[in-house]
Length: 398
Ligand code: FCB
Image (tube, rainbow, N blue to C red; front, side, top):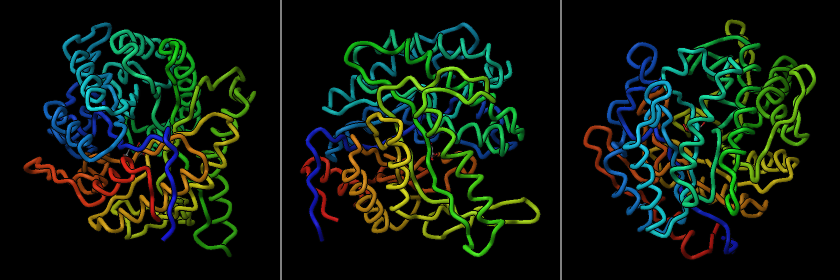
């Protein structure tokens, strides 16, 4: 085993998102479609009521940071209306995180919108961006200087693919043109939210998701073609746009990509295979309850791709869904070592708790802390103690 010293300013922690842990986000678009097209989230981990205990537990493990998101649907349950009580609870969450000596890392948009926003046409309409900015301003005024690390939009590039191209997430659209429009609007929303949230001493970032795509068969020309297409739409387009700071002419041009640091979410590589019925599909791997193909070297590729943006890189998500916690520890070791060696500024494991994993519900266990979906009992796994001890000792053996 080799030893690696964790740089003293490298942030090690865990990530969550509002909808996946809080429970009963009844004004969200996602909630609206549950039962019909999506599994029920119900009480999720009931983080909305149990956050104080969860934050204390995360800190007791030795973690140095906790990433949360603010549910837009709670804070603005209807158009033009702000819920101060809900916001107070987020202020308290941030105070608790700080009070326990951890760094709060706050995301404004994590896949979910208020239903009223989606009913107005959501992200496809440029004129709707203003509603998000009202929300960003309100949150920024409420949390103010308590938060150093802000993240405007989670996985801007993957979100538009899931919601507007593959039709897996609300509003279940399958239209390439809509996907590009939504991406442009979200990138514009990022730039304006940057202006709203930015103040002296804080760091405002945007999150991208990178999954290097590879052909399932090296001898299949069509698999190669699909992998190249996926690499462009998912990975290269966003890396290039942010590196150049502008959109290509065919998307109307214009500056994009205001950010102080970039959040990088990396999980796995995508092995792409031609399928005559669906065109393309991803090869599944049983090591991961999500089916994703684990390959730590893909993280190195992702960091190197994103480095062209010339901003500090924080790994804002990286994780494995498994009941085999030894495999989780190995996964963390391998990826964390690469993140440190490649010069990232932090590493947040996804996720603090087993939680509601979007379109597949509670069947994927990503947590370093087990959360029993029936009883909501929390049990830290060995991986939780492992990650905490690396964070507090500043030393990683791998
Ligand atoms: C990412 C999402 C996160 C979680 C993980 C497994 O794409 O940002 O919410 O669901 O995947």
